[in-house]
Image (cartoon, rainbow, N blue to C red; front, top):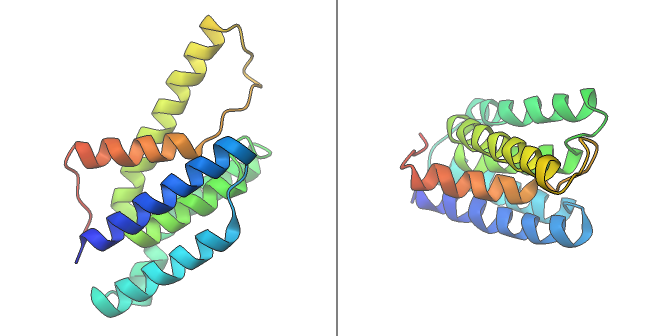
Length: 145
C-alpha cells in the first residue's frame, strides 16, 4: 500500500517532465488532482492526519520561498510539483529528492556554462531534475515513513 504514493508521485513527475520540456509549464489541474488523490489516500489508507499532510508541505514551502526570492529562478510550478511530491511521499523523502534535484541541476548548469558557453541566466526546466532526483532517491533505497 505504501508503494501507491511512490507510483502516484512517479507518474505525476513524468507528466510534469513532459509538459515542462514541451511547454515550459507545469499544469495546475493534474497537480491538484494528484494532490487530492494522494491526500485522501494518506488519510484513509495510511491513517495520516491533517498535521502529517501539512508537515509534508514544508519542502514545497522552501521551493516557494526560493521562487519568490529568485524572481522565479525556480518557478512556482516547480514549487507546486514539490508540494504534490510531498503529499504523495512525505517530507523526508521529498527533501532527499529536492537535494538530489538541486545538485543535478547545478552540475548540469555548470557543465552547460563550460561546454556550451551558456550564461548563468540560461533557463533549464526543473521538472526533469525532479524526476531524476526521484529516481536516484528510489535507486539509493531511501524510503519514506
